[in-house]
Amino acid sequence: MHFELSEEQRMIRQAARDFAQQELKPGVIERDEHQKFPAEQVKQLGELGFLGMMVDPKYNGSGLDAISYVLVMEELSKIDASASVVVSVNNSLVCYGLEAFGSEAQKEKYLKPLAAGEQIGAFCLSEPEAGSDATSQRTTAEDKGDYYLLNGTKNWITNGSTASTYIVIAQTNPELRHKGINAFIVEKGTPGFTVGPKENKLGIRGSDTHSLMFNDVRVPKENRIGEDGFGFRFAMKTLEGGRIGIAAQALGIAAGAYELAVRYAKERKAFGKPISEHQAIAFKLADMATQIEAARMLVYKAAWLKDQGLPYTEAGSMAKLFASKVAMDVTVEAVQVHGGYGFVKEYHVERLMRDAKITQIYEGTSEIQKLVISREVLK
Ligand code: CAA
Ligand code: FAD
Image 1 (spheres, helix red, strand yellow):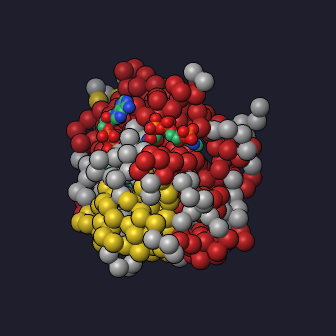
Image 2 (cartoon, rainbow, N blue to C red; image 1 turned 45 degrees about the vertical axis):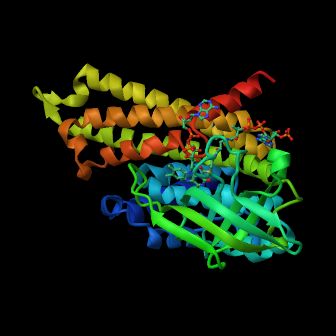
């Protein structure tokens, strides 16, 4: 077993760490407060090659491995999970889905600008009545010969207003249930496609989350991804990798809060000594460090399996389930270590605590990860 990162992986991690400190940290409190999308920072992330990290260079990607991707997700998420979710969705849901399952023409037209970071994408599976129960798609895609007619509503879509390319999952043949579902590429500005208001959220407030409405939207047949009826499998295969990215996001949120807690515990004095010298605080830090390291091992292992071409469904779900719990536990403790200062925005930990919660909900709730894991272990 090798636990060392390669020279290249260490350099990429350092680049992400520097970017997070220099470009994401200034303004992160204000963006959270005003729900401001990190538009300038996302543009820079594209220029750094972080929006198409694992895509083949022939489609404008960086051609890196999944380990490098989780390292970048971890570092960005230590500071700004609203920015890192853009990286996650664009890389693991949109670019991966197109590269793995799209046609050559779709890759030329849509993947190339997405991987280059010139555009960003959105992945649209959830609906008002179909979240965890994703096979119950109500959005319909009627086959009209050389085009499909899309009708319905998607909910909670990340990059909802800022994306240019939307991957939309819809039901073509309800009698076939999940086997009648398709995935489509829909361009922003297509007549009948409208974006609802931005959601006012507990966490990742800079991320733009919207409902999307489709009213007789014509989608050319060549924009269907894969063969007829492949859409549900497409969504599941894509989410398998997405869950590794969100696990890395959770790990980063936890690690970011922990680093702040360690620094604060060494500086803050109470009863004549730094609070880190009170065993109750020192032991909290020990527990946090241990939980984070365990989460890191699960996240890296899942990414490593993906890089080896080995199955990673179970490992990805385990990593997400565990790391998101660690993110919740560690951020709550980080606020506690900061005392009253932890409760105000300037100290960053309260935001990380609010951001942590989403990692237990999106890309499959913790209950759904347990369902996936239990089905794997009982196979
Ligand atoms: N790979 C390939 N195929 C898969 C699969 C996988 N990982 N998982 C399931 N399938 C196939 C099954 O084999 C089955 O097909 P067959 O009948 O042909 O064998 C079909 O899909 C249906 O599977 P199930 O019977 O297991 O379906 P289910 O109704 O029990 O649901 C589920 C399975 C795992 C709960 C699924 O619905 C699910 O993952 N739900 C959560 C949805 C989710 O994660 N949403 C995230 C939205 S994106 C997002 O959130 C982005 C963001 O925030 C940033
Ligand atoms: P429900 O499915 O209604 O679940 C409610 C509760 O019941 C949960 O605790 C759940 O775990 C539990 N539950 C449901 N079924 C079971 C079961 N079988 N066994 C045990 N417990 C169960 N979706 C996208 O498609 N694209 C996006 O970009 C996207 N971004 C998002 C961003 C944000 C900020 C948020 C909040 C959500 C986003 N989502 C996105 C949607 C997200 O994936 C769903 O919210 C999530 O899958 C849960 O679905 P739901 O909200 O309908 O909850």
